[in-house]
Length: 259
Length: 374
Ligand SMILES: Nc1ncnc2c1ncn2[C@@H]1O[C@H](COP(=O)(O)OP(=O)(O)OP(=O)(O)O)[C@@H](O)[C@H]1O
Ligand SMILES: [Mg+2]
Image (tube, rainbow over all chains, first blue to last red):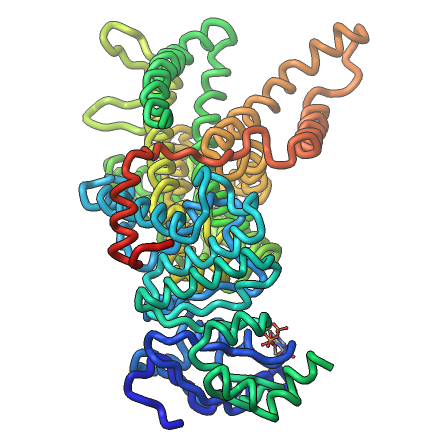
């Protein structure tokens, strides 16, 4: 599995320890541009840890990772956001007391420039930028299917809407790669189905998707390739069909769940 | 949608409110002077100073959610900057339009200086460290009279020049268009101008990219970081903006009082300013102003009112009004926080005037960006 030159994200031998526990050990993988890449594994396998590393929230202990050809192993989260990695969180982390619209507007922060001076004078450039931010935020809100008053506080949205608002906020940063940590958790079948359509639309717009999900059906139906983590190690990788047939995976994960 | 008409009417109303407010604010010192006496005009001046301070702290605490218990340090920096540059202490008498902005800048710089080491701290820990910084500044000012006498130590600096420019001094009665304006009235109008400036700046910042970034940090720092906000810079910006307001009002305070000493900048002051922000309604400019006004007026009203009320109730003064004052004041705070935990006038969700008539544009852009969705 030599990294291809059309790969967007490349991890090589990434390890992360918490005390004695190896949350990730020597994980290598690459994600191609434009694909939907799934990350599965039992609870505590290290999936979220991997997300936290590629979004700069955790420092990796060993190894390195490249995004879009540049090494980012020890960068701050905002640098990675600017580089084009946007994420959602397993436990929804919206700006609870800000409106749905404002949540997305915050996502535009990294692509806009108005500073103190612009804010105080509200000059032509600042006003134009503010208009563009608002406009884009409203588009995104509609894109993820949150209708109704935009001024609703994020905490007053339904659970499914909150998950989708997080996606919209992440999209507002104009990411090259969107990393979603269990976006379907707690959703019902219809919501999951519309999430699937949404993710396909996002991918078709040219954004690479990295997806953690426990919903096996969703992940097998949606992903181009899947990696399976177990106890911090990558135990398998391949197309959904390959992964489904892989004996180690069946033993460690699918089998474990069926039993 | 009918939303389109809404802002227009709101604007008419806003102008009416504005006009009434302007008249009230302009007439206030004269009315107060006539009804309650000159002492109350002075109290109004202080209320304005405290409103400025509270609005400054509101940026740090209310917007960015950084609990700062040493805010009075910046007030002190501004005040001492003014005192040292326009008093006989060093024989310097710099013009006020240099000294005041300089005080703001200097305090802003101190904001960054004191903010930088606290960037990784949150909540209680941040409060403790900032509390320490506030005390350090005060103790510094207290002890900076030896070996070289800079601040005159605990004696403080006196005979500070009043705010004056071009031969007109706010320290003495002036005739403006045939109206006699005593010093306290003049300062009232000066402070009012500055307060309006501070309100304007707060409003503009609140509804801006920077303001949203502050609030995002307040709501969830990790998420804010992950969304690409450089939390270090944005927090330092909050510290320095808040400190600048503090420094500015510190300068005004020094000119107004003519005398300052480290005693004026104790922890109690920081706590008082924080109370204004919290009691009024964190993050809401109106609430913070209300908090400032109440917390300046209430103790004074209690001081002046407690005696007569006791006379009327019991026929004699049972408890010394001076000691009763703080007791009732504390009680009032507790009651307010129990009844209205979010403050008297909490920040409601702001309704931005967004017109809804660009639906088609949105749809077209959507399709061009994401292909036809659904
Ligand atoms: N900040 C931390 N401190 C200590 N241990 C941690 C920390 N973060 C994760 N871990 C540990 O690392 C291991 C991997 O956790 P991680 O959250 O990555 O699992 P996961 O695959 O996302 O699981 P789940 O499916 O339950 O979300 C777990 O054993 C967890 O307890
Ligand atoms: Mg997880």
